[in-house]
Amino acid sequence: MSYIIYFGITILILVFVHEFGHFIAAKMSGMRVDIFAIGFGKRLFGWNKLTGFTTGDLPKDFDGNGNTDYRLCLLPIGGYVKIAGMIDESFDTEFAEKEPKPDEFRSKPTYKKIFVISAGVIMNLLLTIAIFTGLNYYQGKQIVKSTEVGYIIEGSQADQFGFHKGDLIKEVNGKKVESWEELIRVVFIDNMGKDVSFAIERNGAPLEISVDAAVAAPPDAQSFFLPLGETIPLISQVMDDSPAKEAGLKPGDEIISLNGVDIEVTKQAIEIIRDNQQVEMPMVLLRDEDTLRTAVTPGVDGMIGIALYDYYSGEIATVDYGFFESVKLSFVAIAENSILTLSMIKRVFTGDVEFGRTFGGPIKIAKFAADSADRGIASFLSFLAMLSFSLAILNILPLPVLDGGHLIIILIEGAIKRELPVKIKIAIQNAGFIILLMLMVFILYNDIITL
Image 1: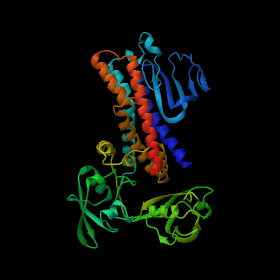
Image 2 (image 1 turned 90 degrees about the horizontal axis):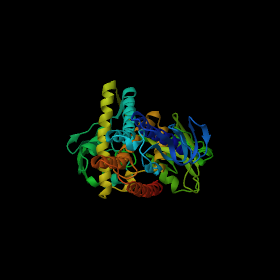
Image 3 (image 1 turned 180 degrees about the vertical axis):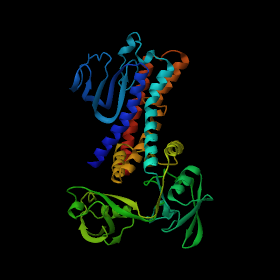
Image 4 (image 1 turned 90 degrees about the vertical axis):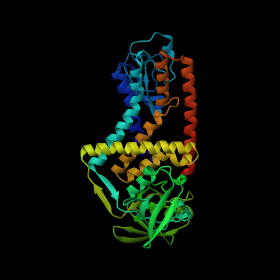
């Protein structure tokens, strides 16, 4: 249920911000906006000046007389703004048989069309900048003052390359690193696409480990092959009517051992739970400095009804920033993530990185939204900012149906000084819609098999 709630909140904010950009830009450009919709498909309810609040679809012959119908639709996977005189996701072509009106999209100069079609992406970028600026200014930046490698899962990439728990990373490709954030930046930004050499200290002795560039992946908890040291596995959420609830587990509990195995990272606990369906397992917890003993029995699905995360318990330094420095740092973060995102897209197409490790659909978004919210409002806002940025990058790609595809058509029409035939535009929209639908199905499939 928490996945559904936070997914709904996340999508509502991002879609509203994006579509509001198109909406306000169209209004500023003197264009008539017939519909402002959150979601696709059947109109559930909405409001406009002529009818007031109504449920269900409006009559087919309804004429808004220039008044926008604000509506919520059945499929909550996006949204759209229907601008008069524009062929878009609604596939409305009735206007094409009539003379252009002054308040229609097709009657406006190219620069206004470009402004309107780019406004959604601009609003997503502004939201990203606003959130990053706010987090930098009010919270500062928390820096993990450690480059110590944590618990190594047997068979993991870190294990295969020869890393051991407790290794101290001193340098990356000859550059000294003193914090985990600096380590990630040097590996994924400064040395993107390059082989990486780690100078480490193990038991007081120097050692060098080389990693092939093909292994590099986005710097997040799911894909960075090196685990951070000094972490403890904490329970962030306990589901009602679950084996964990029956066993007395509570959010904030630290798992010390499970089924006789000392637990150092959440992945250990997850694997033990999955491998012991309907088997009662002893569990040792730490709660407010008290050691508790209980037992839990996973269900037939190999779950006990908890959400887990690895909490860093080591030294954290906080750096405070002024307002203008906070703004500057937000632009720096966007620039770095732009380079990283475009590089990852390229590497997916070249086959260097698996598609499922780079792209996520509604299931992964829901999971990451709920997990980030469990860690606090700052974590959720940071996730929201990154997702807003990703949405901006995705939408500006020159693909049919997306804003980037519309932009290409506008630029072509501006260059040839006339509109493309309606049949061609409809064909492009249909092709783009089919491609997008197939991509969504593929991403959803990847979400399911990679969870």
